[in-house]
Length: 320
Image (tube, rainbow, N blue to C red):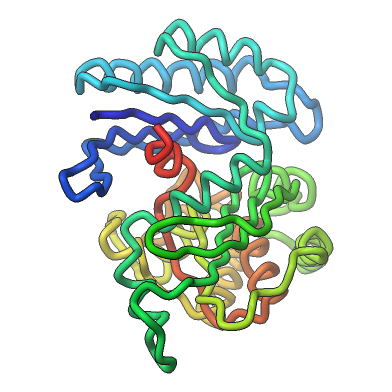
């Protein structure tokens, strides 16, 4: 079966078209990511703006054409933080219904976290198995404790759970109202950000995550999902163009993450946008996203993070 999944996020709209092979694994036929900034101003106004809806409609129109051209059999569309938090979500649902012929499902924070957890590990099974066996003798089918986080534009999802034999069990999931767009609009007024703004940003992120449970004993390193983490990894690697094969599964030491975040925070927007590996439309919110990641890894006392460029859309495809 060929499925298409669309994730309408606060910052980015993602499309995945995938087939399931004879071995049961999903493989991408097409993937697209478009920054439409649907959540622009939502933290202040609590409404989706006309411009943001228009940009997102244009993107979804292109995606609907792709879905038709690729003869998709089943389509699922979800909305996340911006559509949860703001007025105007019904108009977005009408747009989805007209373009795709399906109902857009607005995910709760917990549902978003669950799909993130499921999607994050697609394509990482070999790397996770190797990590689990390094320095400790474990059975090949041993239960693995996992932590996954997804820094979106409006919120950050955190999930703790276990994986065994390809089956995932979520033990804790929560959504926190700290996201790259939300925190940029709320706390970063200068370019580059001032020291007091960066201190306030770090303090807000630490406070938001204060109740997140610690990593379980023997847990693998956390997995960071989606655009903030893939962009920071691409900048660290100095990629002239995005290479998912190099980014997906890449291990980034916390010390290197901190270095990259300090570096991007020291630059103005023009210089930040020109960095190798930087998605220019993400450059204005990457400092806040990076600070959120650093705060969560500090909370967990984690020395490194594994990067996944798969998340809700992949979990949704598995579900579909």
